[in-house]
Image 1 (spheres, rainbow, N blue to C red):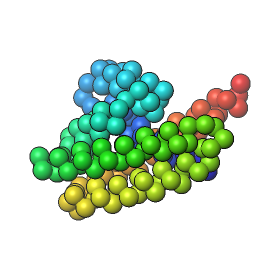
Image 2 (cartoon, one colour; image 1 turned 30 degrees about the vertical axis):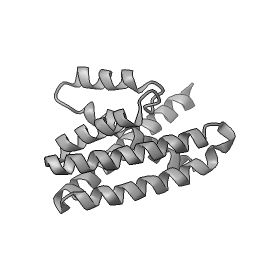
Image 3 (cartoon, rainbow, N blue to C red; image 1 turned 120 degrees about the vertical axis):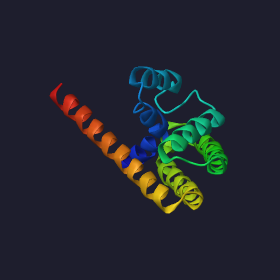
Length: 150
């Protein structure tokens, strides 16, 4: 269950982590985290999240204007659905079911997104996602080691 939640958290933080890789690391990294509030984009609207994801994917995958429009529509629908799930599972005792439902939402919208992308873009998208998950795992393991030492 924890792994599922970590994977979902990684997905939500995708936009912030990817923009930190831009050429201006100091501005991009801090700017996104400041607006992210609770670390998961808690203060951002679904529209803001969709815009940020669209900008990141447009840049990283060299999307066409038509693809960008479709990606934003998909991202907006996904973020609206995820916001509804977060509200549904807002209490700590009801979070157990959240992981599976959020995973299902992500898979649904990933399939839609991949239908818009070229095969080369899909490959790059999958690699981006894999890299982000690896970084999160490494970060999580480092935090656990620090906690164990304390």
